[in-house]
Length: 206
Ligand code: 5GP
Image (cartoon, rainbow, N blue to C red; front, side):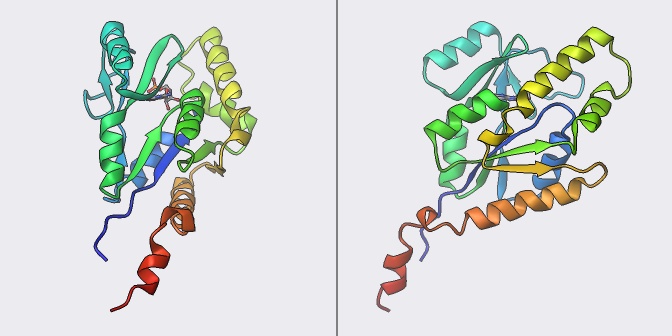
């Protein structure tokens, strides 16, 4: 029984302040997971690394990839394009890896439609007050910017019931959220439709 079982496609969304980055970094220490590096037209931030956090493209480069059908999904978010390059995702899934797409709500819905066996999870802070507190964070931004980011976050949270699962990331307990994600993956992998050859193998002689 050496055939390779297809990996799981795990979509993770969460508004700014949900702690997505911290949770996913912990999950990624497991070699069975592959992080899908997105393409974007936004400017790199100091912490960004080409090919590691994102592939940074001009609008022309990005739209040319879209035209060639090289993106699994793409969207515009706060004035920039973001998209998931298709090739690496399919390759990793074929290799049996669990692939993580850290994408926003519009992209998440596109992928769910195209690949219904993908599992979607929304990561949320415990409540609105915590979300606002985390977004105001260091207090370095002006009120208008903060209100804009809050509005975007609220719009994202409003779509949480379109996801397969919601995980609440309690303050200071990100390892619990990581554990929940692992449990979701483990349970999803037990679904019979993910192993269509199970019966054939079970009844095989010798
Ligand atoms: P940031 O600019 O802060 O890195 O990301 C902004 C938002 O874009 C986040 O919600 C992030 O999850 C989302 N995002 C990152 N890559 C992709 C992608 O490939 N597709 C979609 N639809 N959203 C993405």
